[in-house]
Length: 284
Length: 249
Image 1 (cartoon, rainbow over the protein chains, first blue to last red):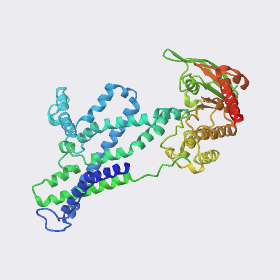
Image 2 (image 1 turned 180 degrees about the vertical axis):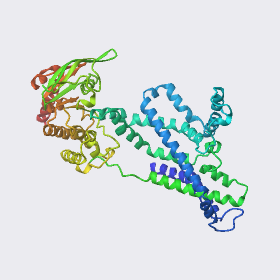
Image 3 (image 1 turned 120 degrees about the vertical axis):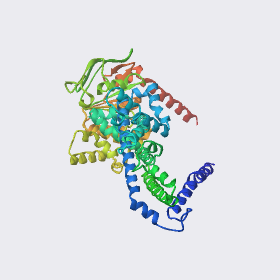
Image 4 (image 1 turned 135 degrees about the vertical axis):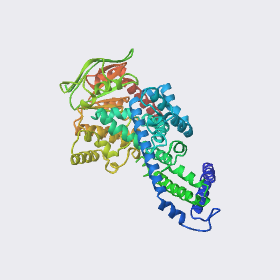
């Protein structure tokens, strides 16, 4: 019975998860080699060559990776600090509600909120004007659609950090970090050593896969970079959609090249991440 | 006396958990402490280790007043009921944890930890992570980690409570061996009568926050409050019944 249920589960996984994904990937791959597409007439490497020679993809990939990395590092660091500093207070109903709230806000809304707050015509610019800090809008610093992607990073942090706080709080309880901290103290650890040698390594080790997955998720994020990002370089998803949706149909294949490369990079990362680890030993 | 506890009281809000704790212990001796759940045994151990501050009283260790000393300065190790290992470190590193805090040289750490691993018969498990060890192995690592730092006093809070009877017996023997080998002074809290008698040089019984330490094992056995007489009676009756059944065959 169990094996029958598990077989049905695998079948559903293949039907719903694997086949559509594989079909889409093969379609994109064929498109990228010019085998499919209205204006394409057979196998060619010119779209791949064009993508690599233009350098736009590489700069977009590097730019996206940097934004995702900075956002992940800042979110994780902030969440660790909040968790370890306010763990008792976060158990209270109101504060846990405040932490949960940003998780319910969709990316597109977070993007618009950030735009409304940080743009030159937004809330903080107006507040600065009223307070006499600036005398005209252009004196307000570029915080959205800017080169350093400050708006994107802030929006990402707003969305991601609460998730990590909740995750770390959960690990803190499940792994009995309070008791391990007491134990470390009784073995001679000072408070800062308890943090650096017990709390941080355990929290980071237990959540490392999710941290990497969030990095991958931010790498491919779309709505927030679309609203808050600059013209060039753009983040990967925005670049891919721009290429695929452009009026010049002969250039669509280049969009698929980027999509294929991105998919391969993410898939390899995911496979490495989920490769089976050493087995758990049993009672001897 | 090596450990002297004088008139220690501890309350949580209005509840008096430890009442007038008075006892002393010679060096390299083990005091077994029996008592029902919730009688204040864990609070007593945590107070002595410095993890809980007493409301009043004095704790002297090796002639020094440690009542107000921070837990990490006391050189007293408190061992939890469960084999609480650091999940991010393998068995070797778990044992080495206290030594690394003392900034001992790498070569000395290696020698001392390997010796300890040998004493604990854990040679094949040294590089395994805690989730790859059995309950008994984890408990041994936990012991090794505590003992290797040469604590002045070891506080064991029902350390074998979660083990099966066979593993428990082996651990009792191992603890006796290590106690002698590393000259350990310890307080051994347990629920188990037999274990209390086996492990302790002295025996105490805690009831509603008050600890009574017996002069010798005979006093302990003869005190009806400890439940030893009931236990003896039970086994005697069983013996008689079994004997009758056997003779009836």
